[in-house]
Image (cartoon, rainbow, N blue to C red; front, top):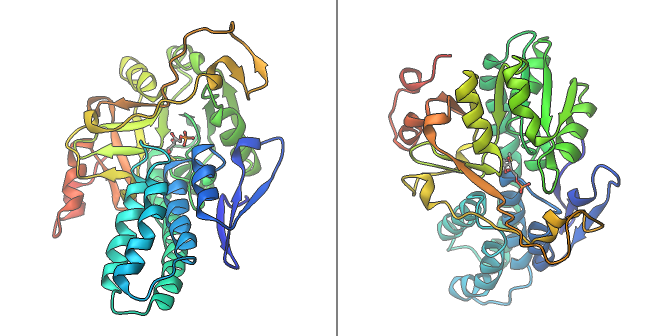
Length: 354
Ligand code: MRU
């Protein structure tokens, strides 16, 4: 599996996911503005991956700052940070990365400017490395939910490409496979940008996991036929009460799951949980350009010229439709997620028992 993003010799190497699966093209970023452009244009996408890109983009931008002291350095960093924050609004991982870097720098304020620049690179690389470990832990917990012979449905791409590696929603599948379980995955195509059709199928096929692609409007029919045993999706931002923002169409799936008594699980690293907001109504929802809807890949037009379009990129699934949330600390009912913020809780007592 290729890496979505890497730091190599002072540059950021980003896989251009907008070209997958037809072309495997890497973009070399030597300027933080390219990284921000890459996030906006979905060359890199998926909440944890754009969090990592943010940290790396800040480290890259920091290298060109001319400053004599900490205060000047932090002032020089402001436009870099603001550029990264202006890219995409829904995934909390961008804000999470900015806050983590900010705390990190303040702890290191006694260091020289040159040393701070080096330390920022190390910290960005560390964020990537930790993300992979977090995903493996999500995989370990989540694999408990997958039984031999199951058919799992997933939406969008919450796989390795959306993260530092291993994925969030796909991690339980990878671990279940290592455990020798046999299962199949149904992938929603995920209009309009087709992350399911282009990316998730590509990833899972490379892993040798049996995969079937469906159009987004097929999920209900398959559930009614009894084909789907469970749903696992990722999240861009989960609120304190367990409301989950994820790719548009996730909410619809969750309601279908309720109707058909199918468990609906969300794989959420703690970096995607926004403990500062009490519910999903405070999650900013990205709306994107009309061309993603009226055209396939900006090439093939599928709607009349001038038609009015709404292209809402994410929706919010109310916590009442979420069976449980799989984190690196274990699996929890949505109502218990807020307890993860508290120190000294007995996780074993709080964990969800399937
Ligand atoms: O618009 P995208 O492709 O960035 O949307 C991605 C998703 O909705 C993912 O499910 C989410 O970011 C979780 S990725 C582990």
